[in-house]
Amino acid sequence: MTELKNDLLLRALLRQPTSRTPLWIMRQAGRYLPEYRATRAEAGDFMSLCRNPDLACEVTMQPLRRYALDAAILFSDILTVPDAMGLGLYFVTGEGPKFKSPVQTADAIRGLKVPDVEKELGYVFDAVRTIRRELNGKVPLIGFAGSPFTCGTYMVEGGSSREFPIIKGLAKEAPDVLDELMDKVAETTTEYLNAQIEAGAQAVQIFDTWGAALDPDDFRRFSLASMQKIVDGLTREKDGRTIPVILFTKGAGPLLRDLADTGCDALGVDWTTDLAQAREYVQDRVALQGNLDPATLRESPEVIREGVARTLASYGDGPGHVFNLGHGITPDIDPDNLGVLVDAVHELSPQYHK
Ligand code: CP3
Image 1 (spheres, rainbow, N blue to C red):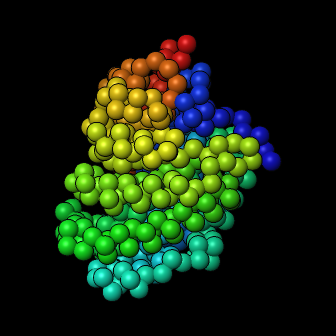
Image 2 (cartoon, protein in one colour):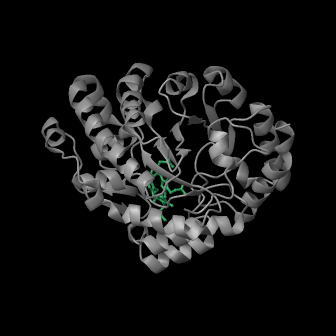
Image 3 (cartoon, protein in one colour):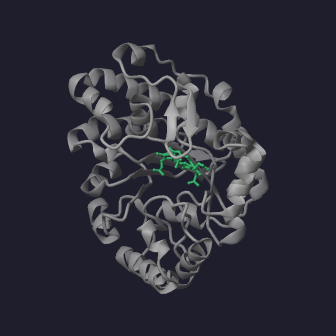
């Protein structure tokens, strides 16, 4: 087994002391990088890129060649899970993800099967093994999945949605049916993440982009409860190391308290909550990851540095902070601006770890 040369991320996620604040960036491999666009063109389209372990490995490594980041994140998508459940994922340029067979009725949900993840998602585990080999211990590899509710919005609505009319209708009119959908996706996701861990993922993050679109009671019943089932079922130790679990509910606000109760190790925080406030909510029970507004990366180097300084100061002294954006980097960002951010974290964070 290769020794991990930079374990800052894993230490910070477990709130252990580090010499500086580690960082990675959500969507760090993506369309803002010209080399990503070239590899995607070589693959043909986005899903072909995800299904090709060598090319998925190549795009995973691209941001690490440019920037001093402390983690790699598996290149894939959260919607590979519903695809493996038989919904038929495809992408329409300009319209985002779509499903050929959305599940919009009680009968369709009852008919859904928990798939054999090794058979349907083996290409993801091949990518994890390929990336670990290529990383050769440089930094840890983060695996991920979507939350059952976030995947559920796409599975039920058939694609991206603003208001979530169909799934919110189920939550109010047929909550037992929605529970069944959440259970099936949670079971699949638990097996999927455990197989990523088995293949070499050293930390995992659950992306709950849309859970906070529910009212707090429904958030707890559907999104939180299904993430709880996943947390309870995950492999938490491998090769003598803890596998940290990060939950990221965008827009969680005070619900960070409930998320900290799940027994996860860390919570992602978006930019609508100050890290100082988030730290008060969770009372140092878990590490925090975030939370600079991605829009800041459109500004001048001075404004970016100032944003980094304010984010670090808001978390304040002590371990347990992983620097990140509050959501994914957007395709319009100048790659040099991310370099300014990375350098600022390296330069400004050691003073908080004395
Ligand atoms: O963070 C990373 O670098 C890992 C890779 C990753 C992708 N998607 C790659 C991707 C991760 C973690 C995701 C998560 C994801 N996918 C979420 C949750 C997190 C979030 O950002 O809110 C959601 C809701 C999706 C579903 C999805 N996939 C959408 C809405 C889109 C955008 C479609 C569009 O046309 O804009 C995707 C496609 C996608 N996933 C891209 C990438 C790099 C862009 C596809 C391309 O290259 O054209």
